[in-house]
Image (cartoon, rainbow, N blue to C red; front, side, top):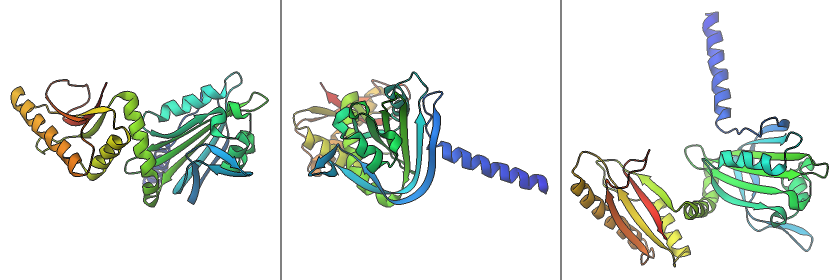
Length: 291
């Protein structure tokens, strides 16, 4: 009985550690953690635009308030490493799964003093305005996480990275969504293509309301760019049959966008059938920017 209780305690401890690792991020190797905290927040301030001073008052160009479970960590980089190295190490890791909502560097961000003392309330983050970096990213999914990363080098050449991760409440997702959609658009334009949705072999291709809204916004914001909705299908059916099926499905998807008021003059449709396979991707709908 004692052994069973010990085993249960061990499993519970492991589950807590594992769950915390899911929303943790590793700093630059050799960094020293000089601040760490976890708390539940209802109205946490996240800056999504440059900080401005208007008649002495600090005002961000854009901001949101979110609730959820907040974790904060501040690391001091090893001597000899810059704030750029330490900052990029963290952001590059997060960029693999998060969509960038806002980023800035140097004086474009505003005053370092405001970020240190007003936004983060961490005086060690005060440095020269030209030496600061700031990034906000968002991981959507069953448990959305909002990430905030700030990097600075102080006058004594010490480099610091401050990270906030917020497991946002469902009630906060709506406030984040417009910034998330714009971030997805910017990410798509940088890469040139995006998998809009995976498809099941036996289910006809159809866009969800959120996917239609995203496409409609993209077409509205970039009326002079050309895009193509591409449907890919694989399987045992003959290649010609797959080609005809994907052509019909691509036509139907573009019609969905048109019925929702989307500007489809520069939106083309293409049924790729089983052509153009990509490793790791099966049946899917893609959006491609036509250069």
